[in-house]
Image 1 (cartoon, one colour):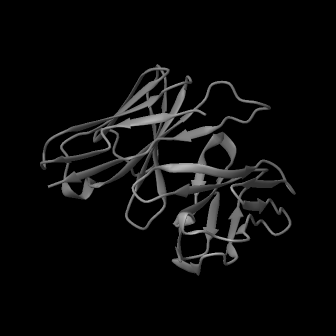
Image 2: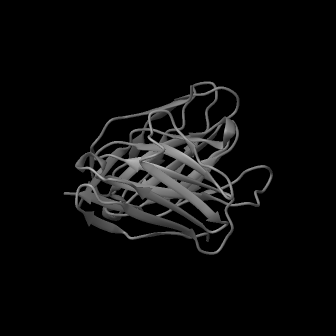
Length: 111
Length: 119
């Protein structure tokens, strides 16, 4: 079956540091890939997505590139802010439109 | 953008009682809604897929008689936790998939979640 593996957290960074959260996946066919963000006490919000190989999703300074050869979709941001503190979920949508989530990575950005 | 609401946002109930959680798509129609459960520090686990006008499809290990799902209209799905027990305490999140996709891609929008505490 499909699966998503993302780096364990929590990740603690100073403001303006570079962020990378690794995500790899296992899936049959050609899944779509997503990053969702969950702020404290809230539901999930779609951060960015990529629907085919070599696509780059980007939003709010975050970006991730769909790498089919390495089955990866790592999330990056050049300069994080305190307001980016949240839990980030990598996910894929495969056959039958079901979404499979990773376990989430908590990011804490300190001033 | 598309908005999905859930009501209530949090609820506390006594063991043995039933609780109903509503999920509404506010500005779009959704033939399919999904119900997820999130345990502390864990990812979302799909519980069931709800299709308007038909029975829900439950994931393996989810008791359909305990978690009753009704999708009566294109904008409303409800999850009823029957005879709740403390182990049912969790964060329940719904998502709704819009009818009209672009290029075969159907966006899923997530609700803000409902925190259920069973005492």
